[in-house]
Image 1 (cartoon, one colour):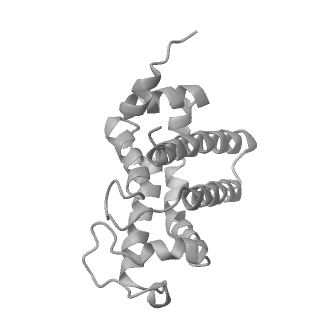
Image 2 (cartoon, rainbow, N blue to C red):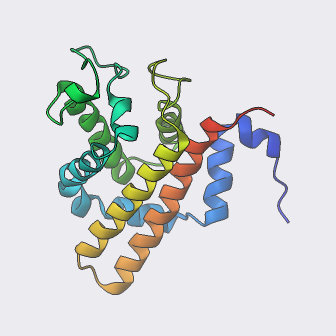
Length: 192
C-alpha cells in the first residue's frame, strides 16, 4: 500500500498530478501515444476549436462568460451577449488560446511547466486568476470537458487507425482529460 499525503494533494500541484496520473494509469507509453498523435491531430485543431465555439454559442449560460474582458485581451469588449458574435475579436483571441492549448496537449512534455499550465487552465476560469469578472460555474466547465472529450473520441475514431493504435490513443487521451478535469475542479473546492 502506498502512503498518500492527502493535505499535500491540495497544496502541491506536481504531487497531485503525479498521484492522479498513477491512479488512472497514465504511463510513459500513453504520453508517447499522445505525442505520436500530434502529426495526425494538429491539422485538425482548427476544426476542433470551431466545433467547441459552435457549441458554446448555443447556450447563454456558456456564451455569457465571453462578454467580460478576457485576461490578456486588449481590444474592444462587447456590450452584452447580444453583441457578441462568433467573429468578434475577443472570440478570435479566445479561439487562439484554445488552439494553443489543444496543440500543447499533444506536443509539450508533461513536465513541471506543463503541469502548471494544465492547472492554470482550471484556475483561469475562476475569479482566482485572469479576469476578476470571470467565474465560469463548474457545471459549465464539466459540460465543456465532456464535449471536448467526445470531440477527441470522434476525431481519433475518424482517423481510421488500426484497431490497436486506436484503442491506445482513446485510452491515453481519456486518462489525460480526466487528469485535466481534476486540475480544473480543484479550483472550485470550498474550504470547509
